[in-house]
Image (cartoon, rainbow, N blue to C red; front, side, top):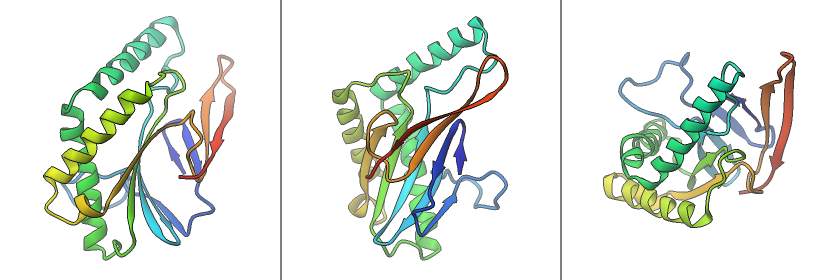
Length: 186
């Protein structure tokens, strides 16, 4: 399964689905995480943010614009707006959807995976960001989500995924390249 340039191998999971699939009929007005992965003893709600993706166009101007987006991403990690307006609604709405579909009987782990090969992230920044995200979800949730969900926050460069992830990109000659990033466990 793919999200942007990142391709995941969920073959070891009981089931995996792209929850925010634009081609799938889902409730309007709700935001969803990228993937829901069912394992033997739990569910993983996986949200992908990839500021390390390749610049579209491949020229110096496109690369400069992409570098600016990476810098803006780091700034977003310091602020609560992104948490309140994007990540919290995705966690809450995805959990609500799973609950309504009676798919929340197992423990749920919310994983935010950040493609960080080109945007090195300080561990202290990630730790405080994770704490702020968890506090916001618990504060805004009237459901069991705030009590039952566990958060994990990782960068692709770290060894932490239970599933293989590869970066797909096009080199300057137009040939598709695949870079295996890691296969790890949560």
